[in-house]
Length: 253
Image (cartoon, rainbow, N blue to C red; front, side, top):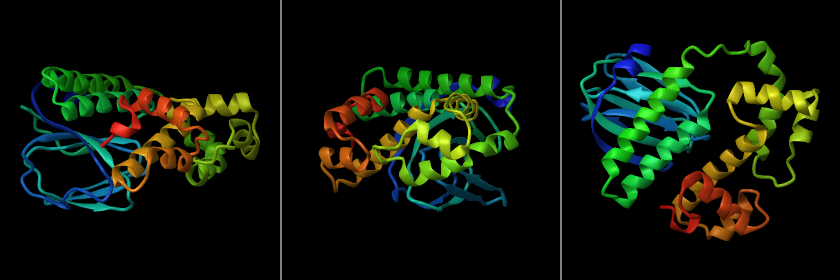
């Protein structure tokens, strides 16, 4: 896999997009370009390739889909994903990576998507830079030494709560560490070791990902989305959204 990142030369970017939940076709025949994909915090998709390969992808995972491949997509939930499609002289099978620095990679995907959506003159340069930023982060993470899973199992009670209650505005890190039976300082350190971000940033990211899903549906006003996602004040929600997505929620499509 390291050879893939090291030898990648992008010739042209063809598309940078956020694929909203429940959109996109399920059958892809002779894929016209290579693709780097980032699932959001809710997406879980399975790719069934014509050659028999099965690629199971989960929330916050980055994966690669080869040019020329034929596959069906089975979505196990309603999450969305970012995609950057590009042309390059490479031959490599599909693969996936779970990464620690998910926020950094998300920023790169978001920058490329925003530039493409706004159709800026420098869109090719911005999108290519985003790909190389992603590649560099993934390349550097291949040799990262991870803490044993048995140590991370201490976080499971908190992760279960985060899945169900991330949008409740009274959810605190102190409470999460308490249900795990560890000190708040140790909980923060262990959480950061596993996810590469703080518990607070993890909560915010899940809220913003959920907000993008709600906004994409066209069913809710910004103030309603703010409330649903756990923000008491719409202005606070808007600041957090702009910081992480790059555009105000009212302009997010």
